[in-house]
Length: 94
Image 1 (cartoon, one colour):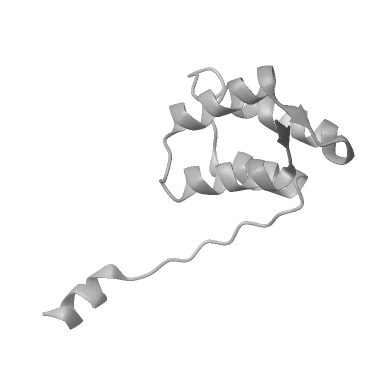
Image 2 (cartoon, helix red, strand yellow):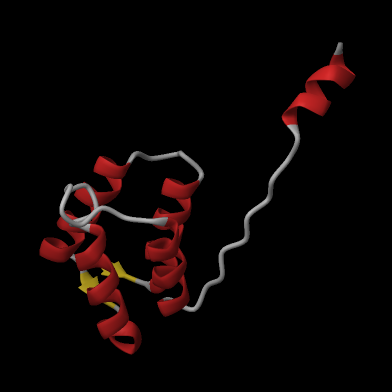
């Protein structure tokens, strides 16, 4: 299986959007380190980011928002945060 920077960015995005858990992200990364073939143009960035993601579910390493931003940046992506006031939406629906 060939893994691209888009694949890794999508997994990080899935984690940030709570579509997958930290253990699921780490497990996916561990499997990719053992089984995947990294796209040659981005080999170093892919290897570095995926290896770090594989350790993210351990207490010693963990993963912060800043880590996610850095990983995405290494892969050529930028993360944006959108904050919405859900209390205003709830009041409008009443």
